Image (cartoon, one colour):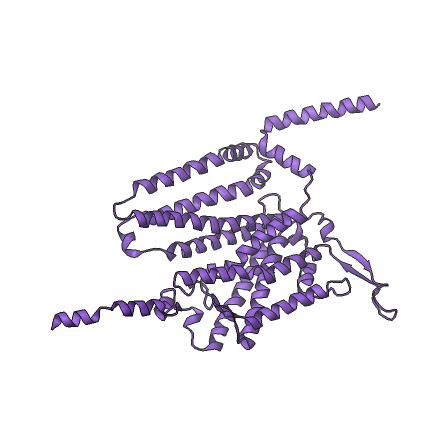
Length: 436
């Protein structure tokens, strides 16, 4: 009799087939596993919106404070975001039973993570570090040697992790360990690719980081609020909370912006946002070192107003015959179009990724939003585009005096620079003698 009861408790093949055919909506247990503050756990729609709005206000306030503090603090914020994203993604495929038989195996993930961080930021910030320590001869030599051996140091750190991984392989754990090894490298590619472009944008001028990030936030908030109150039709099965109504509302804003992009209409959202940001040197000046002082520079032609004559566009009784526009506002229009139309696909990708792993959110760090990774999905796509656009259409491609000086400071020792200075002086004196 006991045997019959045990047998009846086991699922039959037909029941297993029916279970597989069910919708892959995340069950409540999976949602609770990610935390107790997720939006999906709130039954009250307006209470969920209040939690989300409260978290959003705090995030925007903290973000604005960090922007005011400057480039280094923004970079520190990016590093913290990276660590949280890596932590959420590392936990995604973690299995407690297997990890209990592999003591110290999780440390290997972070070894690869910080090795990648040293490599990426060492490459991006090396010249700025040199510019910072140039007045001190001892520090200049020390930093020069560190930069010279930076790549080989990172390589041997990686090789050490590789050997560590091989030595920890255990029988019957091979598949899990190699899967974790591949997953770790995939995380490093995703996290550090976008963050490298983000940090490069920051030091080219906070404007090129703040404008794309702000456009993503504005589009997300506008689509969410409009879809919350008026949304009825799901946009895509991967993300049922995205609605056609919200998309059409954002598309309407973009269409109106493109339609009113004539000089007469300088009040559309994206271009006006660029107009406001472009008038602050703190946001537009590039940072050439790692100091924290206030910046003063020639903003360049992109951030200098150009006057447009409207006499042929408006009737005689119109009071404004001339309007002033920053050239960077036209670039803001292109970036805004990408943020509204293409960047949301980063969110769709993340939604499909979460459904593949049967989870609702990547974490529960932000009440009402999920994890840090949930907020960075569109930002990752946008950061890469912003850097690519800036390098292709904004940054001057020809060699400049500053670029040559940077190469001299990076690749020549102090003695070699002195020799170069002497030789240049001799060349100038010879030219002056010939001309006279």
